[in-house]
Structure formats: structure tokens, C-alpha cells
Length: 146
Image (cartoon, rainbow, N blue to C red; front, side, top):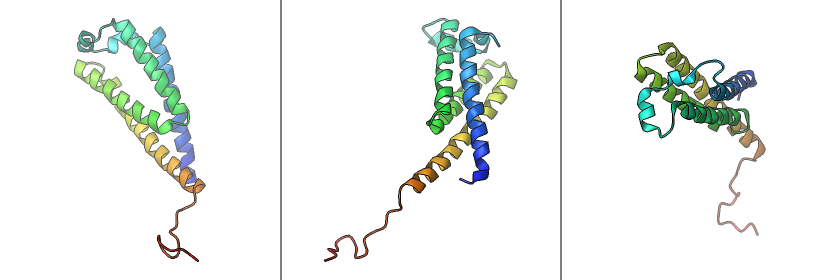
């Protein structure tokens, strides 16, 4: 990967990882928002727990995704975050409320997808630089080279 993109990769990695972890942590304590307001009532009909318990579980998942992004599994975590953010946007759009948050989360999903793609390139180049390129034997696969 072009070294000029390294700062972009790091900025996305730290921002998205920290954002996911902090948002998940806040779902446990409801300091920044009352997160149950963002939950579609139709989802509660399917969930066997209360809205508060469900949002706390969501918070734990978001914290784990944030940590995965911040570790060596950045690509996996970024893909998970992108999917998670699209699901949140669908939830909000289906409620007919919080359109601004739904659009913001779709944009964050694009950023997470970009991080995943950048990570794929970064890790592929690292693997290529560590492992020597394979070359076939001079005489072919059946040569004895006596």
C-alpha cells in the first residue's frame, strides 16, 4: 500500500475502533443518550428480553467490535462494523424516525468498509514482503537435477 495512505488507515482504525467501543460502553450506562428510544418496537416483539437488557447486549457487541478493529483483526472488525451500521440504519429507517442518525450511520458504514478494504491491501502486501515468491524448478516438476 502506498505509504501516503498509512495515515488514512490509522485515522480510520483509531476513530472507528474508539467510536464503536465508546458507543457500546455508553449503551451500558445511557450517559450520552437514552438508547432504547432508537430501538424499533417491532424488534422488541422478537426479543425475549426488555429493551434495556437488549441495548446492553448491543453495547457489549459494539465494544467487542471496537476492540477487534483496534487489534490485529482490523479487517474483520471493520466488515462487522459496516454490517452492524447498515443494520442500525435499517432499524431507524423502518421506524420512520431519526433519519439524520440513519444517514450518519450509513456514512460510518462506508468508512468502515473503506477501512476493511485498506486493511486487506495492507495485510496482503505485508504477506508478500515476508514470504518469498514461489518459482517453479528450472527443469519442471518432474526433473531430477542429477
